[in-house]
Length: 504
Image (cartoon, rainbow, N blue to C red):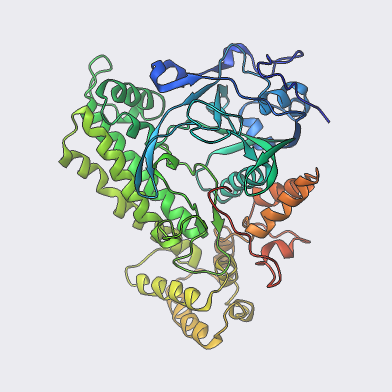
């Protein structure tokens, strides 16, 4: 087992470098220095590599052998560096639980830089790597519990085809960290094309110079199709509106995907919203077991602001805050409103298309809205399991009993099933073909909280085998795996409920 150098300013350790200097950079540091602070991570003491994700590593052209090197452990524990790059922490602001929170920033994250891979450049960021000037009252650490949850969640979402940041590695240590109890520290190394958030734009809502620099940076790297005007004389108000419209569409589609897999983010603050439309910052998230339309996964969310059925509306509210921050560029309010307008239409198109696929329909018809509403009402009233209710629906043509067993009131379920079967008579596909199509979009396995908790408890004993098992399972959550029947089921009644909060 490799151990990392724990000195606070350790250079990249000896041996073959992980990346050629020509492959690394830090595009964010090309912005003015007001956007960030150069600050070194605080390396974990006596760290060990709990897990490395070969799929994410492949994006950086790292092979399995590279993941076993001291250099990789050093990089992911905060002791190493990308060649020639000083890590930075970025500043942003935001609305938290609907209230303006002022300046925030990377309070426990360090951007190591970016690496060019076969599919483009990827920012490499450590989360839980020590204090920064934006830590406020925090200690800058992350605990193993929350780090395992984030590491597994990004794999779960990637396997489901939901846009997300990716986790490259999970590094653990014996360093003590005080939360509700004493826990141990850990770091997640995560990847994204960019970690720019709505909050980065909100931070500069009163500074046209910095806001223009941020707009130019984001457009140049990720939204070149949104540029209006020549490169040397850009029409920034028009460009900003084009950008806002594209971010609105991406966010709307993301919300539809969250709803259709039963995912609750738990803390949809504007500083947790990705400008690229990625799922960002896995804290008190949850995949629903027993369906409740107003399910709140975050025990810190006492008012239920971020309930499952509120997520699309919250995203739209957050987009409006992003739009307000662009007024400083000279954007006209009606133009910004026009850029926000596609949200509802885009969301409904993605939601209806996805629900049609999950129901096994060749297309979505306006009259299907009543059937869809009745579906959610049935699941809500019966507290049926979200994932299995969709998955077993594919088999009702051959045997409806396993699906009916999910409902306490089989009579009510049969009434809905009769309507569903009548709708299927308009679909000419053979049952076997329909089932195959439904099984490709209705997962059998999701990261249920009790499964994540099992991995956390094992990792706390130095055993990463449960993480490895779940990572392999979640890589393709649609394929049935013999021996994994328990992983597809909700927790047994005697399993303690896993409570997650903002400390998660």
